[in-house]
Amino acid sequence: MIYTNLEEGKKAILVTYPTKFAVTEALELAESAGYTIVRTVSQKNITRSRFGIGKGKAEEVKDIAAELKIDVIIFDEILKPSQQYNLARLCKVDVVDREKLILEIFLDRATTNESKIQVKLAHLKYDIVRVKEKTRLAKLGEQPGFYGLGKYDADIHLLDIKRRTTLLKKKLKLEEKKRALHRVQRLSSNLPLIALAGYTSAGKTTLFNLLSEEKKNTSETVFTTLTTYTRSFLIEDRKVLISDTIGFISRLPPYMIEAFKSTLSELNYADVILLVIDFSEDSFAIRKKFKSSLEILSRLELPLDKCILVLNKIDRVKSNEIKEKLSDLVITRGMSQVVSISAELGYNIPKLRKMIEDRIKAP
Image (cartoon, rainbow, N blue to C red):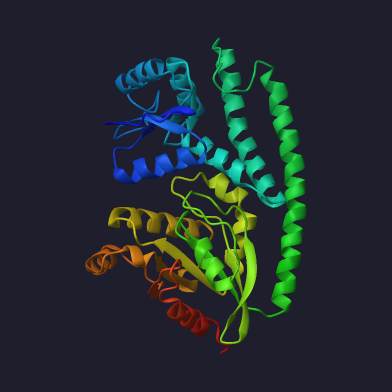
């Protein structure tokens, strides 16, 4: 299956799965990273051993790359270094896999010292695996020229990565100490904490702005928020804190979760977690994103009984579709409260506030 986009720009071929959900999300990621997708090639299995895709499909991508003179191949899966090298060598074009694509977006969106350090550490983790692969290939007589690592000695580069990693970890420890100090101060004030979580682009920041009366930047693009912001607001004359956190996404390597663990740690200290879902999407996308969000919450060892499921953008859903979508969404046991809202229009926010109030009432 092939889709075409003839817009000019930083041209790329996108290789992804043949589903609407996969194509839409991959296009959003690629465009958020500054690429213009001029051709999309899809295949049911893109995790095969040598090129990620089958040999015939790889040859097809090679021909398209030559014909359209593209700058890069975006591969919507996490590739092994050998697969990335093999495809790049065949097509004579750099290959950016899903892992690298997300890192590029993170690098562009990071604004605080902590988020910048976290992104740099994640980049180094990504690079070190590929430098080791370059060393292996060099011993076999290969000339891996598509990693963007230059031609200098791989051992020196490895030492440099390790040195920079050690330095960044020390800097991150200092940032974590600052965050811990702020947390101690907050806990001593005995203010309840409400944390927002959910898939990227679900509307968490819009809801954050509405409740806290802030004006944080919002966008339809992915990963607008890469760090945790905490502000106060009132629930029935009681002051509470609310934190906006980085959005989740599927097929995220464990080390990326680890890199942002200090940022996501606010979820562990929250009295209530608002798990926000974009309910305006089709049922398949809602289920996929809900499942991915639950998997990440599980990896963070967060109890679901802390969560209120917030179905956002209800104003964009036809009334006859609401019941059908709800029946398609299998609510996990332990997550007993569900509310439909529109953060953009303020619909049903009083009901959400009442649910939060009931959760934080002193026993």
